[in-house]
Image (cartoon, rainbow, N blue to C red; front, side, top):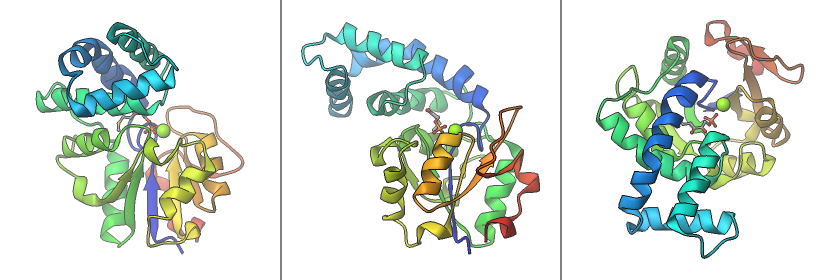
Length: 228
Ligand SMILES: CSCCC(=O)C(=O)COP(=O)(O)O
Ligand SMILES: [Mg+2]
């Protein structure tokens, strides 16, 4: 029996274009100024050091680091220091009301219904926990952070690695088979399934289907009985 849902964000409950056409360009246009202005702040300095370690260049200049981050944004790389810095930059955009956190209406309704039925909700996204909090605090539906019990990002590991799902389940009061993972990415679903989680593939906006996982096009046709 499913007792908890672990949901991806982009492509599952949030439109891909919100991330790719609003959030990523915002980070790309602010990252140079943000890193230059804040490089001495401890939380930023930690991420700059992590970028240098990732590219194996301990003596890289600040400009090299910024160029690397710009390249990672342009190529949508889910590398932890980039994701952590993006969260810090988006804070300004949400606070200025430059944008609100997009949620598909069916996803919002679904999350609310599951919460009301006692299903415990968790989030697992490549976006940092800070970025997740911001999206839900400044969502199209207001502050909905209270729907979620906990949030996970790439600090537990990459989303295509089975070990990441073991790491998450180890922190939950549930067994893997009691947790349903929702995602639009087949490799993430494969990884979760091999860690023992139940899976549901969100096939939105004409993306490819998969034979390995139950799939739905939106939450209007979701049936919990399918996963018990
Ligand atoms: C928390 S919103 C930003 C999402 C993001 O940065 C990203 O890379 C999307 O990853 P996801 O795992 O949600 O598909
Ligand atoms: Mg996704």
